[in-house]
Length: 171
Image (cartoon, rainbow, N blue to C red; front, side):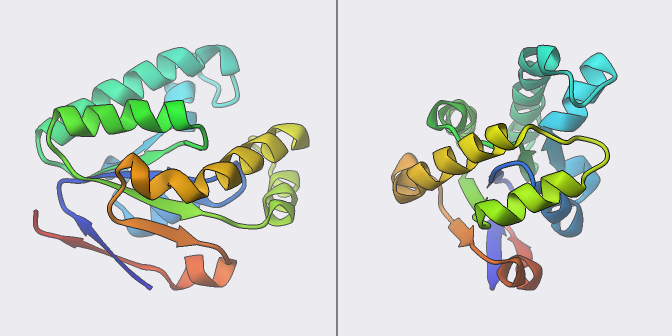
């Protein structure tokens, strides 16, 4: 599948922990284009797992997102973004700056996300947290297009994710 993204867009990666968002971002985007909530938590607190740093990390993420979009730079949000209120905050930034908003959903089976989480050595989350994230993502799939994401791409298997090709097209 070819995913065409405007070169000035906000791209929101949506999926539970263990779905491969950071791997997808690293494969398809420049390091400077991706804003990772885990990396920003580490920047703020020296620990990507420190949940007490989440508010500060997202304040930094929203600020950097606005700065990049104001400069018409493609910007990828690498966070779970499985909750509607979180996506609405991101969409508000893009709308305020008149930039397109795209979403790529990594809709892998729950079992795959749990298995990948269990194999992690750096950021293992409680399985219950991943179950909640997966349920929230699944519940929101039907309404994502109405939220304002265009394009909206849903990749539902590891093969689809592996085969995806991302192209940035001039704005």
